[in-house]
Each structure stands twice: as structure tokens, then as C-alpha cells.
Amino acid sequence: MSQFAAPVNLRPLTGEEFATVDEKGRLLFSKKKRERLGDVFALGVSELGCLVGFPLDIWNRMTTELLNYSSMNNGRLAYSMWLGRSIEDEVRCDGQGRILIPMNLREKVGLTAGKHDVVISGAIDRVLIFKASEYEKFLADPAAYNRAERDRVAAMYQEMLSGG
Image (tube, rainbow, N blue to C red; front, side):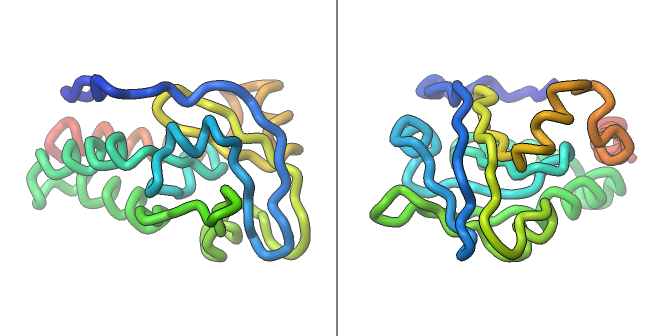
């Protein structure tokens, strides 16, 4: 459990939306999600294997938490590298409310070549963006979905917490 309290001004990211990533890698967010994510936000790959978007306030709290651990902590190094290599922290919507998902992130979650139906799911302090087919698999068995990667990331995080 993090030692940081939620931001007082947190406007929860809620609701499910169905959208399409176009051939150019652009995704349209609803006005509500855009407002709650903020003008600039962080977008990356989660341990679930889907995309995750964080308001900058939340992303900054996460990175501050990491920096509270020694730079010699092997768990911190492993977790920081895992987290940092798959996050873009200056994502902006264009004038039409779309984001351009960077190619490296699209490749990591299988959103390459052509249009893709996705589900944008609010998770209070973040949004999760799943390929529609993967979202169905996740909903069918959330505890088992992408379990190996989730366990690997949890082990890094636990090693960081224990002073690894």
C-alpha cells in the first residue's frame, strides 16, 4: 500500500467506452475522460498487457514513491525499468480529442496495422485500454488474466518494498 494519499482534487475516471484505434494509431477519448485525464497525461503498458493512462498528478505521485527507495535497491531498479520503459509522459489530445498512441506502445499491446476496436475502462485513478477481444478474456477471469506477467511485476515491487 502506498504511503501517499489520493489527490484531493481527483476526479475519478469511471465508465466503459467502446472506441476504435484508426490506421494511424489515433484514439478518440470522450470529453469526460479527456477532462479527467487532463491536458497532458501519461500513457503506457500495464502489467495486464493493455494500455494504461494516468493523470499527471497520479503519475507524479507514483514516480515520487519510487524515488523514496534507495537507488541501490535492486527491486526499485527492476520495477523502475519495467515501468519507465513503457510509459510516455507527455501525451496530449489533438483538437479533435484524439491521442496518437506511440508505435512502440501499439506494438507492445498488439494494436498494429489497421483499425482495432478497443474498450476504454475507467479504473478510478487511471484508464485501461484493452483490445476488445482481450477485454472479454479479462472479464471472463480477471484473476488469471496475464497472471505470469502480473506476478513478475508484483515480485519486483515487493522486492523494492523489502529493501531488495
